[in-house]
Image 1 (cartoon, rainbow, N blue to C red):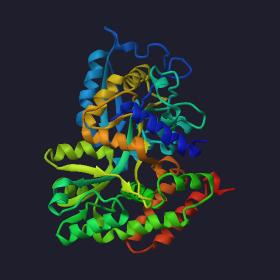
Image 2 (cartoon, rainbow, N blue to C red; image 1 turned 90 degrees about the horizontal axis):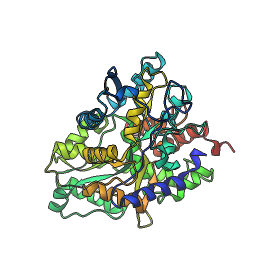
Image 3 (tube, helix red, strand yellow; image 1 turned 45 degrees about the horizontal axis):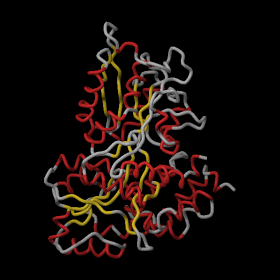
Image 4 (cartoon, helix red, strand yellow; image 1 turned 135 degrees about the vertical axis):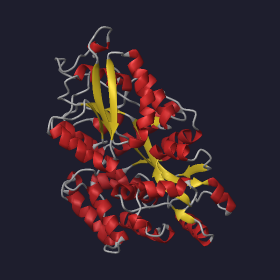
Length: 440
């Protein structure tokens, strides 16, 4: 049923955002469901009291850029729990999955780990690596559709949701104004905007194809404009359309249509390259997620930054959204009670406020607000015109996953080895190998 929740997911996102009226969400946490020594249902974290032996918990993440921010958040927890110390260790995002899986399989994994959303994270629960969190205080505050990102096929919750993400096109307001440009309201206007910038000697898009996940993310922004938000999503999930349908092929063609407006040698550029190009104002636009906002503002506090949602072919706009990663407890942790105590903190409004204000993100915890106007704008657009990030929410399964297949095929297209039609065929072949609606 998880794969068929597109409308419910969007509804949950809208509800969360409206509660925020500018920035909100929902988080949860919970102790071990069996109430045995592995976890307590009432007051996990016995070592937090005075006189108890101090415990140090290892906490792993794929967000290297969050290290400094988490120091402040962890200090707030440790001040109230002097018997527990948190050792936050982030890894490069592209290496995290391999490092984490290897550690878990060798019983040397961290006490607390960040889960990829939806299928990748849930697969760790299915492999027996995660502690159920259904009884964790605070977990009940989240809607089922927000919890779906970390709910296993057994119906148990395994992660405390962290944030509600969006993807959009950031732009440099100064470069737009200097060239007489405004936010495009259609695909043709976007292409004309890019052409004007290029003619003026400005790189239109800071874009790189070296890292596959950036390609699926960029496609997640571009594609809903061709299939008008959620209409095509419903057809795909019900098996009434597939990835060789004209709407999807058109989305791949548009990814190719943007090539003249990418930097030279873009196939060899990674996130750091393109991020630097944008915040140093050498490029006018940057396709990326809400999670980049805080970093961009820190790298260049004077950057005249704004963003716009994707124009659709029916004259509207759409913002791609999903529930981001959650935090889980290692089922083989030697300090489950203490780890669950920290996850209980992560499910609290206090954590949500610290997180939202430190990282300029939409917290998944209901009722949390932030003063940042761009975060508020993301929340408001998510409430009025969101569509699920299709490849993350519904097509992150398979071996390789359909999401990975799209990434690999797009890289092939940018190397002139595949046509847009062939990219679509590769994606459909992958999805057809496992997606139930395509097996009817």
